[in-house]
Each structure stands twice: as structure tokens, then as C-alpha cells.
Image: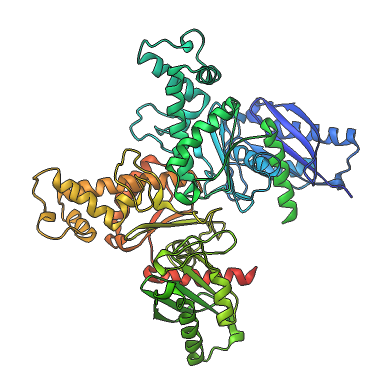
Amino acid sequence: MVKYLIGIDVGGTSVKCGLFTTEGELKHKWAVTTRTSDGGTMILPDIAESVKAKLWELGVAKDDVAGAGLGVPGPVGPDGIVSVAVNLGWGRKDVAGEFSELIGVPAVVGNDANVAALGEMWAGGGKGARNVVMVTLGTGVGGGIITDGKIVSGAHGAGGEIGHFNVNPDETICCNCGNAGCLEQYTSATGIVRLANEELAASDEASVLRNDEVTSKNVWDAYKAGDAVAARVVDKFATYLGRALAVIASTTDPEVFIIGGGVSNAGQPLIDAVSAVYRKMAFSACKDTPIVLAEIGNDAGIYGAAKLALDAAAE
Amino acid sequence: MVKYLIGIDVGGTSVKCGLFTTEGELKHKWAVTTRTSDGGTMILPDIAESVKAKLWELGVAKDDVAGAGLGVPGPVGPDGIVSVAVNLGWGRKDVAGEFSELIGVPAVVGNDANVAALGEMWAGGGKGARNVVMVTLGTGVGGGIITDGKIVSGAHGAGGEIGHFNVNPDETICCNCGNAGCLEQYTSATGIVRLANEELAASDEASVLRNDEVTSKNVWDAYKAGDAVAARVVDKFATYLGRALAVIASTTDPEVFIIGGGVSNAGQPLIDAVSAVYRKMAFSACKDTPIVLAEIGNDAGIYGAAKLALDAAAE
């Protein structure tokens, strides 16, 4: 008999939901608006209501659902409790317990960046691997580390917080996290724009970046078109990221690094630039570890959440 | 009925052996000389012979032995094969298979630094924890990462190769590993001596370090006695190590960091210096992670090897 999994990716503006078979086939996906008002108290009831309605529409009975997984934008402790999710208005919350109660099937929760890494391992750029590191380059920089098929959440939910590696001890400008010199400050979309603005201010050199709004996409387009200022920005970006990956290689030594998030739309030139630095800096045994692009994009969260539910059901 | 475990720590000059109960009690320990001649072909037969003789002496029957674990100074792949152990004269070798054949009980193998971390978690500074990072500061710098009670060996046996983190991209002097700027170059016993010699050469400032041979121990003694040159050396040491621990905190986020190896004999002043840097650089959720001294010293290897055998027997 076919069993189903529910994968849920809770974001600050919308919640992505997917119905999967236990073999990993995405049968149906839909979205729910995130109601962050009233301290986010309606978010889980809204999702539960929508999932129940959709399962009824699709003719999937409660007994056919092996479990539900949720990825949330906040740290998840070893006890499975979400300690805070600022964008949702949540403080400390037993997300899995509450959602399981609401929907009547077993539920499990993980940090969204970690869950996305699990999704890419299950169905994307890390398919077939059991040891994966994913870096998500978006407005911020998130990460997920999987060893032996399992998310490394860490003792304080900070496992895979790659965006907050110190990569520049001399930095004076603060990161959102309160420290200074974090990887996120140089390799997020925002970080790339900052690097570009600094580079443009440092000289009068001609650059197509002076013609338009400076965005991460424009920097990569200019780089691909041979713009020298953009090349210097990409060089800094690649140096910080390549070095950070080399450090991770000497920590959990993954089979593959997966680069995702909006910035990774720059494609193969980004991978090439980062790989060149990585190959130079990595410990000898790890120099050939592949660095690849994420493959399932925005669906990584729902795939990973479904896999989390599958693993929990198997335990 | 009491079951026993054999824990074996294979070093370049001697092999430490221990007989443990499955409850973790060390009943007996002894050592065997490492015969590295003839490509190290006699090392495993020598150990097997010695273990058998000792078990006979102690009246422990073959059926009472649950298994044997070996820690070896080289990378161990995901398939359990040792790819190389330079100090023993070994190339690629199925250590567990060969030893199991020789002794007639199940055997399992791990990298020595990883195994020492497991030992400290089982019986030393990390007792009770399931997520531990150990850094061994000796002639070189080794490391071991444990998540969810298991060694992270990595895809190429480079899991926990903390000594080969790049901590100084501007370094021009090469590390033994072929890269430059590795943590080992600044925080091993050799690295501390190098930092001290550089500091002494940079000025004519009075220092007790000018009176005697510069050793890691002398640097720490001078530091404790208030020597200003030694204080600058310790400051550099602590900055490199504290920053590296902060990066690890954002990777696997352990419950506790354990510092071992000969350099750690410097004691609490070393912990205090490193902790001060760590607290400043670590991601907010991890700032309070304890950094402690290793507790079982040279026995960590045999304890960890026995625990490895215990875990393998339980699988």
C-alpha cells in the first residue's frame, strides 16, 4: 500500500506544502499564506487546516500518512523544541508536538536550512550521498550539514550555521548576529552588493556596474561579461567562500558540497570561482570533493521535511 | 556474565593495550614495542600475540571478549580501510580484518585522534555528552569530532582534521601537509616554539625565554610568571585556537570542547586564554560552550578503542 508523507517549509511570507510518496515522489504541492500577526499563533492551525482539506480533496486517508515534517526558520534544540523564530513571531515552541496534535499524525521539526540540505541529499545535488554540506546563499547565508544521513543540529541548534563563521577577524562592521567578520557579510546577496559598492568607491575605473542599480545578479552578469571591477568582487567572494569550505572539509569532510539560494543562480561560473580557491586551500585528502549547484531550488525545503518525516517514521 | 573489550592504541614507538569491562572499567593495561621494520608487517602479529598471552595470564576466555578496537595514526575511510599510516610504514591496509583474523574476535579500527575523542567522551572530560570536539595539541595538532555518540570520519577520513584548518591565509611557510597557514603551525608544541622564536627575534626585550632552550613548556611557565614576550606568544596561540573553536561551534556545535595533548599540560591558564577569545568570536547560541582539559591523558586512546569495539558489538 502506498504511504504518504507531508513536507512543510514554513517561511516568513508563505508556507510551502508538499504531498510525497515514501519513495520520494512529489505528488502535489501548494502554498499557504503565513499569518504572522498575534505572535504567529495562527500559523500552525492554518497549515493543519490546509493540509487536512488538501488530503480530503486528493482522497488520502489519515491512515495512509506516515508522518509530517516541518522546516522552520529558527534553531531547533536536541529536544526538538524551536527556541525562537523571529520572522514568524515565535518564541520557544514545541512545533512538532503542537502540529501533531492539530493534524493527528506524527510530526517532526528541523531548522529550514538543515532541512533543505536533507532535501538536496534525498532528491537533488547530493542524491546518493550520506555526507553532505549545503550552503544557501540568499539574503543571508544558511547552511546544513548531514553526516551519515542525519542532520547535525548541534547542542544549541547551531549546527551548520556556516553563515556565521568568522572569515575576517579585521572586520569592524557588525553582522546581524552581533559578531563581525561573518561569512554572511561577504557572500550573501547583500554581502556581494556591499563588496561591489566598496570596490566601486575605491576607484574611478569604468564598470558597467556604474550604469545601474548594484545587485548580486548585476555583479555576476558583469563578471561574466568581463568587467574588471566585478571580477575583483567575485575574487573576494570566492576567496571567503572557498576558504570556508576548505575549513568545513577538515571538520566533517563531506562527499559533496552543494551551493544553493538565490545567489547560486549565477551558475557554473560561481562554482568555478569557488572551486579554484577551495582546491588550493583544502586538506590534501579532500581537494577533489565536488562542489555542485543545488538542483531542486525552492522545493528543497519540502523534500527535506518529507525525508525528515520518513526517517522519524523508520526509527 | 562479565564481557571484556580490548582497547589498542597503535603509536609509532609503542602500542598501548587495555583490557576493559563493557561497563568501561580498565582492568589491566600494558604496552608492546612497535616494530616498524619490514613495512610494519610485524606490528599486528606482535599485538595479537601479546593480547592472547595477556588474556591467558588473566584467565579471560575467547568467548568472554566482545571485541577489540584499534586506534591508528592515519586516515580511516568509510569502508574501515586505513589508507596510509606513515609512522608505521603502512600503506593501504585492512587493519580490522587482519587483526580480527589474527586474534579470533571481532575487531574495528578508527583514526587515533578520533578514537581519543571517543575515549574522553566515554570516560574523561566529555563524560555524559554525546556531541564532543577534542583537539589534541602535541608535536602536531589532531582532532576528533563526535556527533550523536559517533565519530565523524568523513568521506575521505579527514573528519576532525582540525590541525589543518587554514587560520592564516597570509602564511608563506609550508605545513607538513603541503598547505600553508594551518592551525598546527601555531598551536602545536612545535608551533609555539616557532612563535616564541619569532617574538624573541623581533626585539631585544628582556625575557626569561632568552635564558634557556625555548620549549612549549618553558613558554607556558614564563607566561605564568608574567613574562611579557611569553604573553604575546600565548596571545597569538589563543587567538588562532579560540577562533578555530568558534568556527567549529558553527559547524557541529558540540556540547563541550576538550583540549588534550602534551601542550595542554599548561593547564587552566591555557583554557582561560583560549576561552576568552572563543567567547568573543563564537556564534551567540554557542558562546557558553565549555572548553575543558582532557582528563585521561595517554589512556584516552585505549578507552576510545574499547568504546569503538563496544559500539560495534552493539550494532
